[in-house]
Image (cartoon, rainbow over all chains, first blue to last red; front, side, top):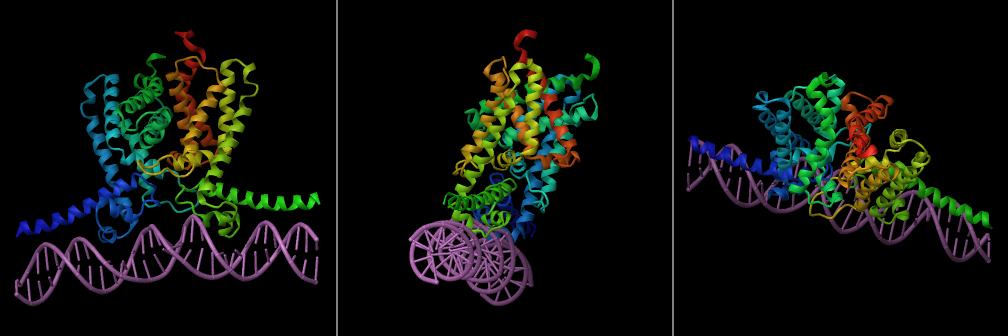
Length: 217
Length: 217
DNA sequence: GTTTGTTTTTAACGATCGTTAAAAATAATA
DNA sequence: TATTATTTTTAACGATCGTTAAAAACAAAC
């Protein structure tokens, strides 16, 4: 009896999961309005009205997609912090940032969805879930601050984390664009190496100041 | 006789110009696929099939829009370089960057169009004019290099100009997003001040090295 | 004033869109 | 096995899309 009940629940979950995966894929490649339910149905291997059976509106589907990819991100974020407090600050930073970029390189959906949807017209209704698009940025900054003890004014910390985050979203979320300009293959080890080195080279002086505070002044 | 001919030519130019202005406005607010001919017609104050009379396809209109906004940018760029060679390097840099940000703040169409359209799916046809979206980035970097004599390896120069450009496109092209996260008004003097200071603070150490070469080592 | 050329407006096409409703298929229950 | 519940598929709706064609309006030429 329990097995039978589980079977139905499993089938329902499987279909829902298939739709979500298809939707994540499509919403990671097209801005909200361009991504269509028919595209998502095709990506999920189902007929498109079935999307409406499981997610009554496109809005609700998009919001669920954003929630899922950003939750995944923040769960991973928590795990990167593990073990850092036993290390000296510079080693901790190196390790955290290595973990950050490794994960981001392999899970680009969140960054791509943000990069695809961040620019919205003034004076019009935001796309559904836009608050989450915005919060992703703010919360990613905050987790950096939680992970790395920094000594500086709030403005200094804001500047650093803002720039770091902006570069990461751009070089990884819009990786195809930047890689093609550089003549590299998007997602290739060479490109990812370039991203990490570039971001670190430019942000490192400021980051060093924040790690050590005014000790060096 | 010549005046009559001029009058017709003027009327045609005026309508064409009105359509282009409407198109620039709409393409600066929506990604290519979302921006519709009906929106553009409305923004230009005409009936939408008239857009097709002056620009046979949406593609051709978009390409003309991109060409116009980026040409405007590069013409302005040339003017910012004037007078720099008589100044010492640091003053020249300050002046150039002031001019850069002042212009960019007042003419955001190019940056917004780039930010709205840079992420494109792999393995599908690019949107029309995508080569120009890409070239804008490359050429903006190049004009920086032309304006400011820098001493470093090609990689170092690439890193700096790439990061500088990425931050500018983001903070100005996606200014609404970033301003709202910071709790500032987009386009306000406070926000523009924040942008300039943030970009300069983070890129300045690297820029100083490039201006002075290895003299300080 | 009439004819010709150009521009603008109106109407409509075929296509895709998100969504709904109903039929069909499948699964669960008695 | 029959009935009920759930899921999937099919068909279609009203809406918008880029575009085309034709009518109307305007302008220029004779």
